Image 1 (tube, rainbow, N blue to C red):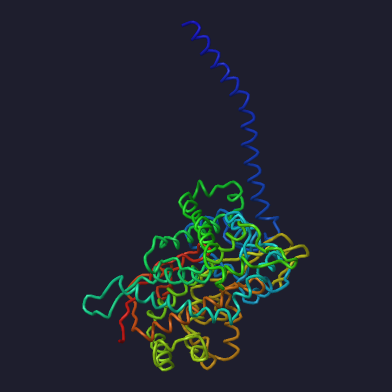
Image 2: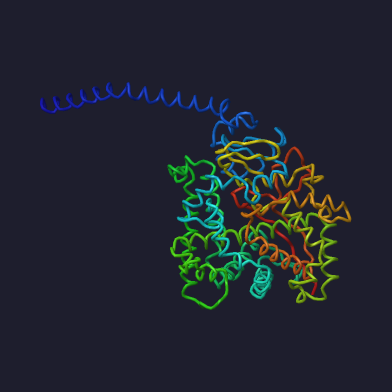
Length: 526
């Protein structure tokens, strides 16, 4: 007993000594942390190069403001509302100013401007294990990748791929018609375009990239892939908003479900790459341009498997998820605006004698109202609604008359500039006529196009933008030729209580937009 008592007493004494030894250190560390944080706040508010620019208080002192709004999916709206309150220049993060002015698009994103992609894109590189055409920050690396992939996205090559796209569109209408039949009519059915749009665009992109669709329209197990992609890009946005969170892997602690689901995308991309390697080597799809590409010295351009996986991941996301958003949004706006739908129906049905005639070419190009509808939908509900930041390089940059020093980040907020009232009258209203000069003027239409930036701008403009538009042309034209369509439910944005007249398609800013609905009723004309 005595020995036990002495041992216990000795341990207690050691604990007390350790406590007394560490207490001053803990006090110093705690005090130092408080003083550092206080000093950082003072610096960011009063001495930072961007200190003069207004913005929400918490946004000016901490990146966690952006992380919070990225987490709940309304960062694009918060940025838009901040510009309504503070004006053209808004500081939405300690080192980031957004400029809500169409003139800033060329100043920031134009060719040879003194900027590069910011540290925001390091999250994508970290998650992929390699840079792809979207995330590459180095200009030479991006130029090399674009040179390799550009031939795959020429007008002639995309037109030749129509033969792969059309069967998927036919299967889309056939498969979606089985989701919910109208009880009274055999030729009437309803479908959630938020889901079925995903299935269509992913199957198309699977076919074009890997030579084999993902089987989503048929109901294969891959139907969860859109949710996996949403998580992957959402994780990229969260980590991009806070490099501190990326560096210390805090997303695994704060957003474990998003991280778990998002990790599955690279696994899926690797699987598809391997399947494609074992398939027909003579097929001319996007993947063939990657695997057959050579550098100027004759060596393989994509020598590392990790780089191939990263590029495949980028093509899956960029070519399917963003197009699915536009498909669902177009059906939403058309069915919520009967006069616009009526005019589009008249244009398509008077241009084509049958759905089989709807092909790429002069007749489809002549459907100007169809083009206007798609432009107006992209304006109201861009697939990437947030910000794509650029880091100013040595020597600084002047944007819309303001000079910014090296090291700061700039961006044009896409959703906000698409609702810029000096260019777009009634900016929250769906008005396709604003894109037709006979209803406004040539100058007004040009100003609209100059302010439209859904695919970025300049040398970093999305390489697959034309493919997305082709899919939209074909699906919408066939839909309104074959069916009478009407809105049933879902998709309406409920975040405009101050303006109940606003009827916009609800987007969640997850970098690429998250979405749900709408449910649309289709009644066959035949």
